[in-house]
Image (cartoon, rainbow, N blue to C red; front, side, top):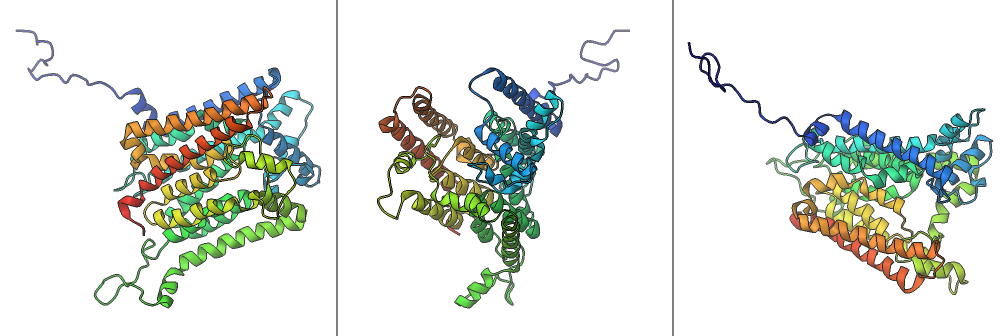
Length: 456
């Protein structure tokens, strides 16, 4: 009896040759564990390195803002006001959250752990924001135009945030932007899921916590029309009713969902402010809100207003109308009016990205931490963006954004570390170059939505 030939069974049927297994990348994103475990280890490594650098280098890893936060927490733990710490310009809630950093034990190791607990909180917030990004991408109509995105693909885009070294560095240095990432992504998820009460609570809390999330209110309200929420009326023929008079248009705009969102968000915001004012008085209002209207931060500032702010800080005011008090006008016109009107009804996540990008780009103070405000929306925009469809455009945008930022940092290094006066023309030209690159990228984002669909 003849023996079976290679590749066949004893009965003559051909054997199935096993194909190649899934690639490493496919396996990595197939479930949540590898991605989120890697993101956790990634941040733990940064935290440990930061401890080493703080102990061994004259250039500290810990951000100066974290020292401000923890000093304010120490005052709070002692029953004093967080505003006793000069330059603390935030809600008292942040100092309350960081009270464990002020606890002292007899163990030097535990004191280090407790002092670093705020950084751990911020890094953990990064992970939660990444999970919310994945959750939004897998909602119907968000990750792809035609339906929910496959979870494995969604995790690839979420990795842009979760495994981003810039994001990990900023949070583990002690910046609280990770908390903001959680607030704005959870707000977006709540709106898309049509959980109006939760969205109102998050919007009110977010504006109290950091002011700038108020820019999302116009886009959310414009997006939440009756048709979007399945409440549009029809006439006798089954056609959509079109309001004819001004009164009908106003009535059609003031839907129950919009009113509910406005009432809940405003009540949350006002309620928190009343509580904090009752506890801390006018210093709360002065440092948390009023300061930001007239603030002059001319150091570490990418803004094109940088040099003007520097001069304004050194020279007496020639008039009552100062640039730091009116610089917000073009910023708010773009982020709160024009962009929502053009984009919101067609693509809310991309609208919120464009709003934040415009707000940061045109802000009179622009630091690296602020970049995280819009980077958290980037994974929600990229799946259907021209930056991915046109690889050359995407690479050009990334290279120019990094290079123009690097040019500014080089001038800033010479100024602050080497003591050379690079304000004009070096730093000024670098600021303008970075501003123009950001305006170009903002135009790409807007054009990805506006020309395809027209103004709603």
